[in-house]
Amino acid sequence: MAGKPKLHYTKGRGKMESIRWLLAAAGVEFEEEYVETKEDLEKLRNDGALLFQQVPMVEIDGMKMVQTRAILSYIAGKHNLYGKDLRERALIDMYVEGTTDLMGMIMFLPFQPPEAKEKNFALIIERATTRYFPVYEKVLKEHSQQFLVGNQFSWADVHLLEAILMAEECKPDILSPFPQLQAFKGRISNIPTIKKFLQPGSQRKSPADDKHVAQVKKIFNI
Amino acid sequence: MSGKPKLTYPNGRGRMESIRWLLAAAGVEFEEEFLETREQYQKLIKDGALLFDQVPLVEIDGMKMVQTRAILSYIAAKYNLYGKDLKERAFIDMYVEGTADLMGMIITFVFTPPQERNLALIIERATTRYFPVYEKVLKQHGQEFLVGNRFSWADVQLLEAILMVEEKEPTVLSKFPVLQAFKARISNIPTIKKFLQPGSQRKPPPDDQYVATVMAIFKKD
Image (tube, rainbow over all chains, first blue to last red; front, side, top):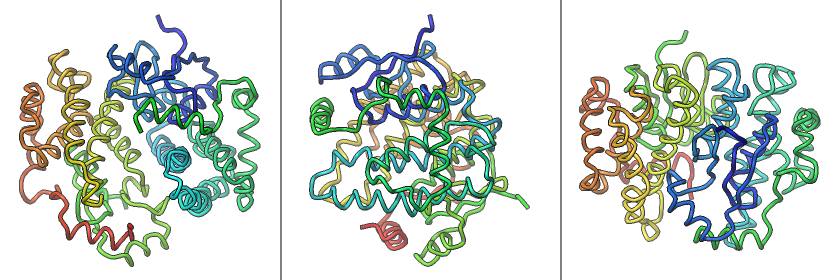
């Protein structure tokens, strides 16, 4: 029987956070089971629950889905957040791959050796402000619609907002050269499902602190 | 005027190779422009041809597509290699993400400093994490193809991954009889067979010259 999707991951952002965002944006309630120890991970593996022995894993519609992009694509497709045709889907895919690359850099920062952190932090700021944000700023400016693709709310908008907020946690004034993105941020944050997810008490997770980093390293033998 | 898709990338496998495979499998003829110098690359950026200043770039149907997965998904859907519904697409996506992770280890291998390279890990992942999954999938449903009893992107990418790992360890399929049969079957599909023949647009494994060219173009340190 199809109940709520059930997410299996650590109690932190990591690769699962974009999935939480997308489900929340789609107004889909979900449950979470947290991997807190190595034993928790081993149990999932031994039960045959993880196709490639990895999390994220999302139980949804009778499937045990793994691989972040596969899961996100399925949710987007199922909840009409993937454009109206193949071309819109192509644009959405391109845009989310860009924000994925940016957020990936930020996600890995706490796991970098201390001597590399400063360099990588500077690279994140550079990439955000010269490679990624200018693209979305331009897209929004050129068509001057509310949303990135097809004049309709999509996965691309959710992902961009997530990336913006994550980048702002690194550097609070990072959007200062990007007026379109500032307006976009205001607009998308006010969508009721998103607004709810941004409120305290939602299933949105906090940035990784030292304790969480230590736990993750232990669970995954990093 | 939109004619054949046009691929822009260095003259080697890298991230473009899966795209070459998929177009070839779909029977789609394509053109290639090879990046050979940093100046060429910078010109592409200056001309605004690269959305995120990166290649692969595929000009297709009036779009300048970037981001490997976006390009592959588009081609798969356009040429009916993406399953018949959302669930089949979900399985194809999961399977190709697995093979992409495995091939990603091999792609980055030649760009890793020799003392950090770990071929044993690649073979271990292939034989304990990835190949057993596809062996089991095929064994359990007993069908010719991975998903939905029909040729799809997942089959193309699995064959590509098998051949790539075999180049590193020729006996890697010895414990996987179902994959051995799969390999032979898919290799014999006419479009694939053609792509596997000498003179096709399939690229050879990277050599030192390719690595040097890529480092020079992208100034990888």
